[in-house]
Length: 390
Image (cartoon, rainbow, N blue to C red; front, side):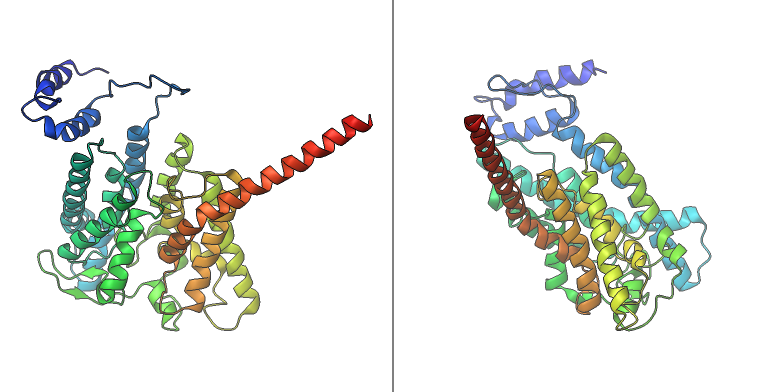
C-alpha cells in the first residue's frame, strides 16, 4: 500500500540532502530514514539478479517480529520473578509493566548508541546505513541480566559495533555475531554483573539493587540439582537473562523464521542434535550428577534454545553450504554442552560455542567446497576414461 503523503514529504526534502544540497553531507542519514519508511527506488541495472519482494529490510523486520514473543514474555517474567522473590502480590499486568519499565532503558540505550555509531560510519564512508542493527539492537538487551548497568550496555554496544562489525567493513562483512560480541565483552569485563545469583532479579523499579535468584545453570555449576521443575524451565518462569528463559516463546519465533525461510532449519535442527548427542554421551559416562542430567534438560536451560534459533542461524556469520550448516550446527550444540559440563567457570556455554564456530564457519565451508570440487574432478576423469574405452 502506497502512502502518498509520506512519499511527497520525502520527495520535497530530497534535494536538500542530495549532492550539492545544503545538507548533502547527511545523504546517508536521509537515505536510511527514506528506505526504512518506504520501498527504495533504486534497482539493479547491471549483472544478473533476481526480482524478489524479500530484501534485507524485510528480512530484518521479520527477525524483529520473531523476537517479540520472547521479548514480551521476558518483560512479564522480570516482574513475576521480582514479585515472587519479594513476596509482593502483583497482577500479571503489573508484573509485565514492571518488566517493561526495566527493559525499556536497556533497549533505548542499545539503539541510541548502536545506531549513532552506524550512522557516523555511514556518513564518513559515504555508504548506505544497513538495517542489520535493528535486530542486533534488540538482541543485546534480551541476552543480558536485567540488572546490567546502562553504562555497561553502552560500552558493550560500542565495542560490538566498532570492533565486531565496522572494522571489518560493516554489515555483511563481520565474521562474529555482534550481539554475542557485546555479551562476551560484558562477561569478561564485568563478570560480577553477568553471573552469580544476584544479577537476575531486580529489587525495585528505580534502583540498581538486586536480590538472590539462582538459575538452574548456576545450581548445577554449584553441584546442586535444579530446584525448578522441567515444566517451569520449559515455560520460562525461572530466573535468567531477560528474554532467554521461555522455550515456548522462542519456539513461536522459530516457527515464523522457518515459515518465512529467514532462518536455516538445518542449523536449528543440527544444534539440538549436537547438544542431544553430547548429552547422551555424558549420560553414558555418568561420572557426576551433571553428567547424569537428562540430555533434554540442556535444551531448556540457559540460552541454548535462544542461541540455536536467533544466534546460530545468523546468515552472515554461519556456514553457507548445506553440508557445512549441518557440521556447524552439530558442533555448536556439542561444544555448548561440553563447556557446561566440563568447565564450571563457564556454566552457560552457548555464547562461547557460537562465537568459536563463527570463527570456524569459513574453514568448514572451504573444506566442504574443496571436497565437492575434488569429488567432481574424480567423476569427470572417470567419465572421460569410460568414454575413451567405449
